[in-house]
Amino acid sequence: MQLSSILCAFHLFNCYVISAHPTLYPKAVGKRGINDVSVGTEIHLLHKRMENSSRELAKDAKSGTSSNKHALEAMFRSMENVESGYSEMGDKIDKIGENLGGRIDGINARLDRSTYTDEKKHQGSKK
Image (cartoon, rainbow, N blue to C red; front, side, top):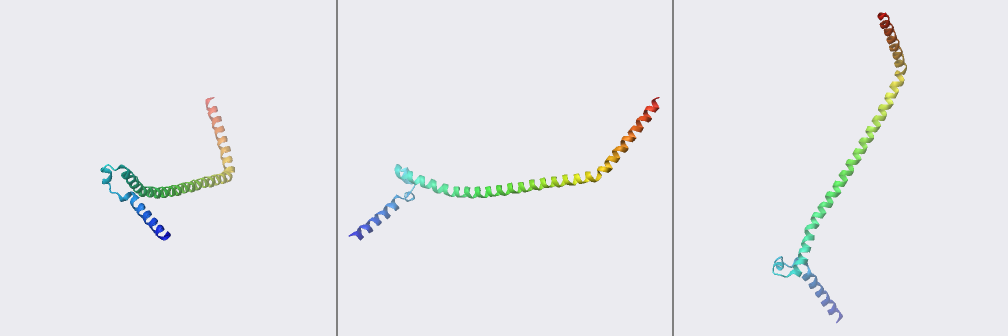
C-alpha cells in the first residue's frame, strides 16, 4: 500500500512539475486571455533572454577590469621608470656640477675681472 502511494505521489509530482513549467504553454495562450499562464511564461522567457546577456556582460566586465588593471600596472611601472630616470639624471647633474665646480668658479672670476677692466676702459674714455 505504501509503495503504491509513494509511486503515485512521484507520478503526480512529475506531472505537476511538467505542467507548471512556464515554457510548456505556447505564447498564443496569453492572446486568448489566459493571463495567469502567460505571466509566468513571459517572466521565464525574460529571464532566459537576460541570462545570456548577463553572462556576456560578466565576461566583458571581467576582461575589462583585468585589462584596466594591467593598464594601470603598466602606467605605474612607467611612472616609476620616469621617476628613477629623473633621480639618475639629478645624480649625474650633481656629479657634473661637482667636477666642474672649480672650473666654473675660475671662469666666473675671469669674467668678473674682464668686466671690471672693461668698465675702467669705458670710464677712462669718457674723461
